[in-house]
Length: 442
Image (cartoon, rainbow, N blue to C red; front, side):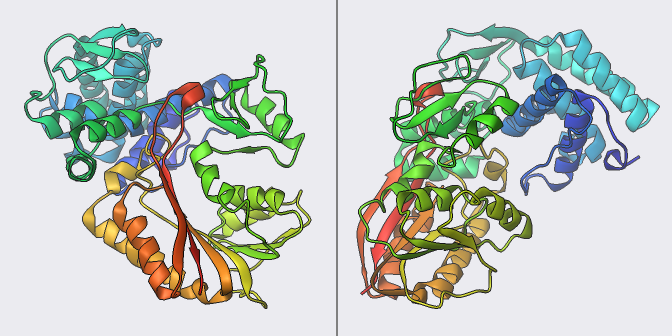
């Protein structure tokens, strides 16, 4: 029975269904949806946590499951994969959940939504996985070890030395942090072994909800938020409904990581009368730009219909911003063109866990080609002396500095500023990574 065709009206059921669908595509995962309609706020939070943990630690979970399965997890039907991944994620990484409750519900899901015979397999496998886990050591800093899995603060101690030997560095790091060896080897070559390990460990962190607030906002800690280390930002720690009400109090407030804000911040000293945000997504950077340059006329669009609809609602509080059709071209030459282009997301893997699994040389080459197609389509819209802001949430040279140099050559201009932000910190010091460059057109 296709698990997608049936509603799974529990937190574990919703997460399992989402992971079963993802298993059909793995490792080429798109953004993975999660249906939580009808669930209580608590169950929605649990379903989200299970799904996110499984996606973030897929390679680790697959490795541990394969140790007790008679055939590889990936060769099994996707519904069985979903049940096992969901259960293993809870048993290994979600310390507060009783193991017996996890196993019992995953067994019941298998019985009801797959077939009776699957229940016995799930029961046997998840009980063996449960026996692998010795517990969480919250104060222990992770270092390579065959019985240690890193957490966002502390480690999971396994009952046996089950992980690959530490001498096989890339293989060990891949299993411990759930990053593909291709990406680890690439980062090691580009940045060195120490920084590659640092970025892998950042990829298993739990990113906080960071909110940019208006100038003059009192950031003193409350029950709902605490100040971020970077001025102008808070870390939200209240409920989701409270966050939505908080954001509506002022149109300048927006959920945004400090690294994501840096590209538009770099435009603060520009004289802008006419600007266009071509890959605007849901409008975070458009809103930031509109608030920064209230006297400018700003157009924005996105080729995706759903994102463009969200964009229209997002910028509704700014009279100087307007959403236009993707095929529209500005009637006048622009002072500023914002190109926050599609990218590999390798600088934001803590937030976009699925992106790490689909990263490969062919995909990177396709992205570079797409980025150049976007640049060619739009670069001519900028007048002489105007600026193109090119940005990504990537760590990869081909998408970043190399692309900015190519762009400067295309418009016979120059890079007047560029910056690479590196993923770092946790909670109040947390930030994603990203790259941006300002290229002035001749």
